Image (cartoon, rainbow, N blue to C red; front, side, top):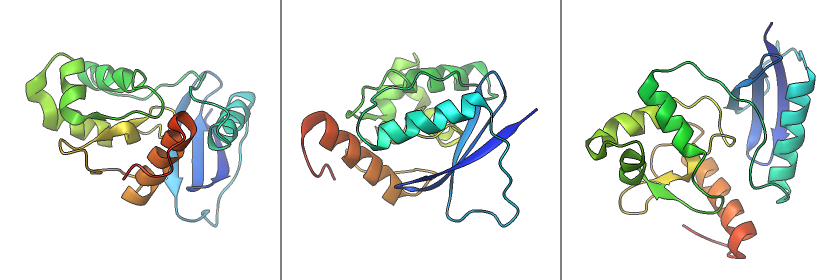
Length: 161
C-alpha cells in the first residue's frame, strides 16, 4: 500500500509518499490538490517530524529509509547526494567525479533532476560550475531558500547567493 501525507513547510507544501518500509517521494506542490487524501503511517509521521526539525534548524541529517526506482548509475548518483555535508555545496562536475566518471556531467545533472526525494536526498546542494544556482525541479527560489537556510544554521551567514 502507498501512504501519502502533506506537510506545509516554509518552502511550500510537500507531498510525502512511501510504504511501510521506505519513503519514495518528497515532492513540492504549489497548492494542495482539491482531492488530496491523507493516508498516514508511522514512517510518514516520522518523516514529517524530521522535516519540521530540519526547518527549525535542529536537524542536519535525516534518518529515514528511502527508495526510488532507477538504474545502477542513478542509484550511485543519488547515494552520493547523501555525502554532501549540510551547509555545503558541490558542482555537477564534483558529483560526476564522485561517481567515478568526470565525463558524465550531463548524465549526473539529468539524474539529479530525477530525484523524487527532495531535501532528504539533498540535490539542492549541487550547483553550477561557476557556483551559480541552476536546475532545481522545485524552482530556483526554493533551492536558494534551502541553501541560505542551511548556510545560516551551519555557518551563521545570512546570504550565500
